[in-house]
Length: 146
Image (cartoon, rainbow, N blue to C red):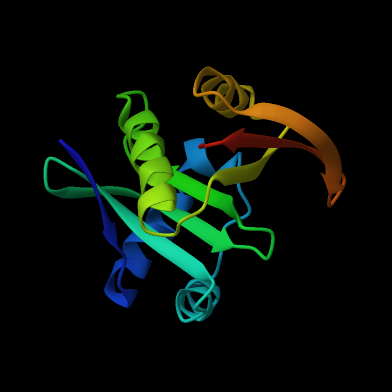
């Protein structure tokens, strides 16, 4: 069973370790501990811990924006390839509708993260734009939850 629970500052060390895994590090820009803690204290940033079989298995970062949307900023899964991330994304979408009263989610993903793009597309996200961050191409994707 997969669950999403509000994260706590005590989870941050585990999040940092997950971000440092080589399979994750290739697709994200990891945060320092202070950056995670500062973001966690921001009322517009939501950290959700992903539990699989009652064990911490990853986390999601969401940012509430001004256009009644949610930016799906990050998902990190410690043990990939088991469908945990896809199930967690479905729970995150329900959380956005039920708890945040938001009907639109958007994200950016590095173009080289073909696995991530495939999963997001499979889950109903569609590309709406492109951008460049520190010389790397980003694909911007969105999904209506209505």
